[in-house]
Amino acid sequence: YYAAPTPTAPPTLAHVRAHRDALLAAARALGATDVRVSGSVARGEAREGSDVDLLVWLPASHTLLDVGGLYTRFADILG
Image (cartoon, rainbow, N blue to C red; front, side, top):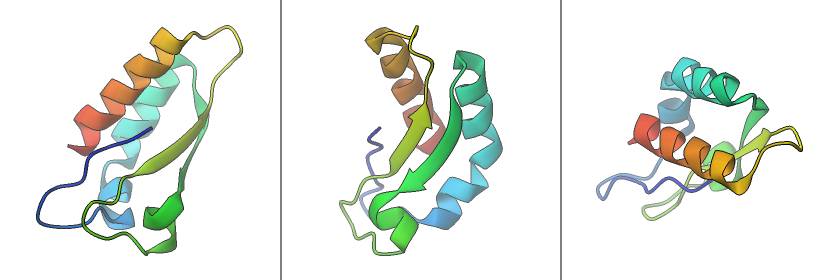
């Protein structure tokens, strides 16, 4: 998953946590579980231009269209 950062500030773990409930609800609606933040945001090393890396577990029955839908929903939530 890639969410474009705002042009003036790097993404932060606090920003992701502020949207935690909405992210988890979006994941649950698609059957995704075990949502995790990884990469530079998780390590507190994000800079301007960094993305937000989210790892999720999806059942094998899901398609790339499902992944794309979840990507879009996450991007909408995180801005």
